[in-house]
Image (cartoon, rainbow, N blue to C red):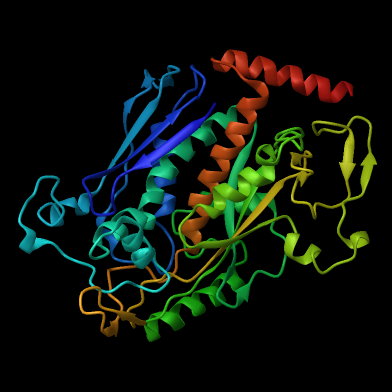
Length: 391
């Protein structure tokens, strides 16, 4: 079973991810992991924090001589900003006068709900853990899941479909999405240059007014085999796991599989993907699909088409022009607290979603193929591929 957890606060000393269940013998490329961390930091509209941090994964356990050894993997990502917060958020009692309270909860954040839940007098500690800075640790763990999936020939990437009211009006090609992932200058991670410039205009507009903007990212899983997930139990369906994985990301308020939104308003004849057969096909099976409205999942099971998952990201909740709130202590109306923040994070959220999707797909693959070593897992996977071709 593939399991992962994260720990750490936004302005704490470090973020930590633990990942257990990867087979022994998987080659780990540190430069790939660090590249993924870099990708999460990019995009027009990011805040000043990204100018401070240079995220790098430091592996503490589970990897020796650049290969997994079957034991739990622990990853540490240091926060460079810690030096500015060490006296504000000390582990020991410290000086209470140096504490920076979040005195008024921000609408849209976890501030008020978290303070009520944990009986906290203000929202500093809520902010520290609820912050999207935590997704850095997820990306580190997801990079390892990606390396595992690559051994099975499966790729996971994302691109931006919409920023504000500007939406991509065509279907992207896989090669275009791959090219985006290799760029060293990331604007808004859209495959269409003209649309991307109009998206930039959306970000520029909210920058001028002290507002924020959300959007939609799309994660594509290429070359996933049919048969991942199951219809047998509600919590074992692949779409259940993918939706939960993407919805768990900060600021994601809706998840779509395939053309789910369009399908809800369409007749079935326009929605369901017709099945064909072509002997000698290069795919996993000789069965073909004329379209992929289902997003690669039918009945909770992958069907061999690309998996398409979209996340709908609300605008960042911290505004330079704050909304109305209430002072925690006086209960009087005030403007919400302001913390250094981003204006648009749709490209970064897409990268974080890649990681969550990769972890979910890797877990589903390991549930199906098993294996304590990569040799065993690949042997089982090869046997399954032969079985599909012989069906």
